Length: 217
Length: 217
DNA sequence: AGAAAACTTTTCCTATAAGACAAAAGTGGT
DNA sequence: ACCACTTTTGTCTTATAGGAAAAGTTTTCT
Image 1: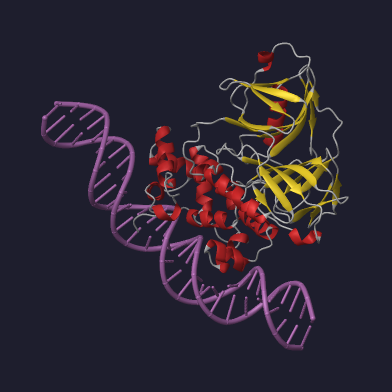
Image 2: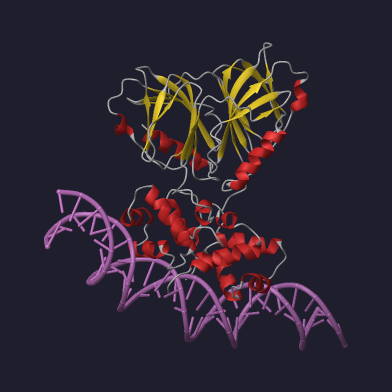
């Protein structure tokens, strides 16, 4: 047999083989090392990477474990994530408002990097805010807050409000209705990292970020 | 052959076969209908559902399409993921060192919440540090940094070192070797959020966090 | 109810493909 | 050019996929 590309590759995306190879290379390992980690023979790995065979489910599981990737991520032929283009980005102290509402100003961080799964933001929670419970929202995913300046109160539908001062942090299930209120009459700055529900979705990571940003304020 | 349960089932979760059968039944279809939809023979489907064979990747793709489920969802034998207990937690300004090394002190945030997918930490990067490149590590997942105090330099295997001052942030693919260096002779504090590669893994989110923490310094 | 009919699933057998082992070919460094 | 290392390519064994018959299940008819 020659090439199974058409059989199990998605139309344009990388084949399973190229992805496995990219992952292995990204970790700086040889076939022998992955063979050790997975229990698969070197030749089998070679053939898999060259799309000469279609590995069995059992071996896909061993492969995923050895490559330290979830099985779902492994079989989901998402675009190149191991190899190319950008693998890192950074943001200078952000001064471009990504989105502004009566309640929040938002500054997206590291937005150049498209392929990321987490969405980091800085939010300024405005002090002059009428009634806390107005802004209650729930959306998919999880979020983590860290208070950079000022103090906030986290309101949720299931817990009593929690006051967080500078340096405090919170982690919550975003599907639970929640909102933030600046305390002491001063604006508060928080660092927020949002993680969407779709573990593999790349492009819809972006759209979901959009969604949450449109919703969350 | 009798039963491959131990080969490709997770310890307690449902096997692939039971999941396929459940999906088919839920849609009210017969093996013949799924055979039609997937192109797989009835006998092959039967064996798959009874865990008598380990289907090839090519056939897993056809199966997923026929069952109208994403490949990732099909192979990810996830248990019920809805159930709860805690859905939020918070941390006061952390003062308990989670882990300390010559190079870093780490403070885990929101560690009470077990089910979370992101792992937030505060790291103090120590100034008195001999040679930057010693500590280079690569591990699975992605990480986001935000500089709280001081200045750091991010070294990676593929990019030139980047200086980050207070308020700056970075996002990087953790599989790329990297390390942080405190600049200007002062310790630097950063907020880091790490996201492991396994999207659904709950409990192994914890173990992976362990892994990265043990490795990353 | 009982029996036949129609349908669904499992089992047997054969062809073919995947996996292991070993040898050959390719790579990189000195 | 040599050596150590990595990857690919054969050959053989073992397992998966397909086809058809057997077994099991439900429906229908009298």
